[in-house]
Image (cartoon, rainbow, N blue to C red; front, side):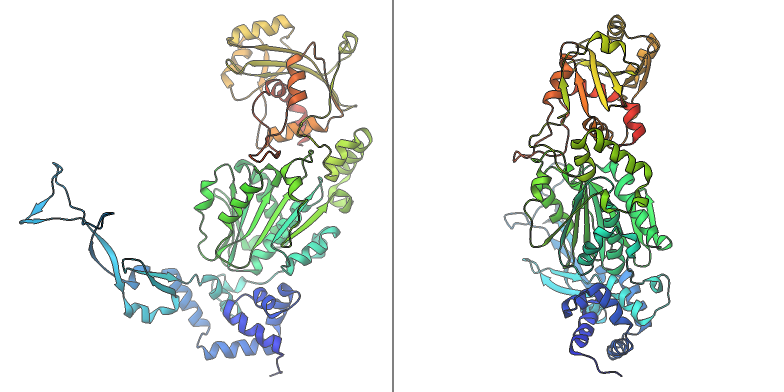
Length: 585
C-alpha cells in the first residue's frame, strides 16, 4: 500500500469520525474541501486504509444495513424502566384524586392520589446491547433518566456508500459538481467560495435577469447532495409566492444537474426530497412564523437556508430571528440571501449590505454579465428600450441601482392640468373600481395609457361613502361611464361585480394572484410618468404623491406597501390590470 501523507491520515481519521468527506477535508486543511474530499475517497491507498479501519471496527456492509434497520425501528421506550409515580404539586405535596362532589377520594380507608406512568430507571440490558445508538445519558432534578439518541442515519448512509452496500437507494448516493456551463461567468468566484465554505452567509443582489436565483438554486442542490446529513429551507415573506419562485427554481436546478430521477418534488405539501438519503428542502412563508419553529427533519439538521426577496422581510431583526429558528443543530451551515435592491436607499436591505461582515460574502450582478442567448432577444430589447426612454427606471430595474433617498413609492408623478384637447386624443381609456362603504370609501378611477411613451394619465375619479351598489352605479353613469366601457373591479367582492353587471355595466373582476400587488406597483414605478390632473382627480393626486413604503420599528423602510390611503391607487391598478398582467412584470 502506498505511503500516506500526514494530511491524508488526518483526513481518514476525520472521515471515519464524521462520515462527511467535505467536512473531513476542510478540517484536515485542504484548500478545496468539497472537490478534494471526493477525490481523496477515490485514491486506492485511502480506500484501502478506510476499509482496514472499518474491518478492525467490524463494521462491514451487512452491519451497516443492520444498524440502519435498528435506527429505523428503534423503540426508545425499550431503554427505560417504567413505574407508577405519585404526582406532586408546586408545593411538593401529593395531588389528591377528587370525587364527583369535589371531595378527596377514599378507597378502602385510604386516600387516593394522582399517579403517572413514568421512566424511573434505565434498562441496562437494552442499553448494553444497543448502546451504539445512544448519544448520552443524564438525569433531571428528580433523578429521572433522560437518554439522548444519536441521529445516525446520515452517517450510516455515508458508510454504506463507501463500503458499497447495494441495497435500495444507498448505491445511488454520489457526490456531484456543477458544470461551468451552468453558471454565468460572473458567478464563478462565488461558486469557488461556496465550494470551499469560506463564508457562512452569502448575499446576492442586483437587477433583473442577473441569474442570481439560478445560481443559488444550483448550489443549494449541490450542497444538499454532497452533505448527506443536512436539509434545506427556502423562505419568502408570503407563502403563496413560493411555488412559482424558489420551488420552481430548485426544480429547474435539479433538472439542470441531471438529477430528476433522484428527487421527488411535491406541491402538497410543497417539498423536495432527495430520495437516496431522504434529505428534504422545506418551503415556508414568514406570514405564519409559528410554523417555522415546529419543523424537525427526520434526521440530521437544517444547514441550508435561502431567503428570497430579502427586502420583503420586515427588517434585520426579523431575519435574525428566522436564522436562529432555522439554523440549529449542526456545525455546517450556509445562509443565502437574494434580492433586487428597492429604489430607496433608505430601505433596510440596501442599508444592510453597506455593513459587510467577515462571515459574509457579497455579490452584485446584472443582466449585462449574462450570456445574451440565456436571456433571449425580447428581454434585451425591453431593457434597451427602457434605457432609452427612462434611464433612471432602467438603472434600478435592470442594473439594481437604488434611485432615491426617501421612502416615496412613486417618484415619477407629475401633477398638472390635463387639457380637454389632450383628453379628446386619448384612445385607450381605462376604468377601475375599488369597493368600499365606510370608513373606507368606494373609489372609481379613469385613466389613459400611452404605451409608446410609457406614460399614464389620470384624469377622472368618483369617491363615495355609505352608498349602495345601485346608487354608486347611477353616479358613475351620470359621471360618464358607458355600458361598453370595460370596468375592472376589485375581485374581493364578486357580488358587487355581479350587481354592476346586472345594472348594465361591462364589469369584470381583476385578475389577481401571488404578488399581484408587487407586480402592479413595480409596473407603475417603471413608467416614465404618471401624469395626474389635481383638479379632475384630487384624491389620486394626493395618494400617488404621498404614498410611502412601510417602516419597521427602527424607522427603516421595508419593501412592503401599506394597505391604507391607497383607494385611488388600487382603482388605477385594477384599471391597468390587463396591461401589467400581460407583461407579467
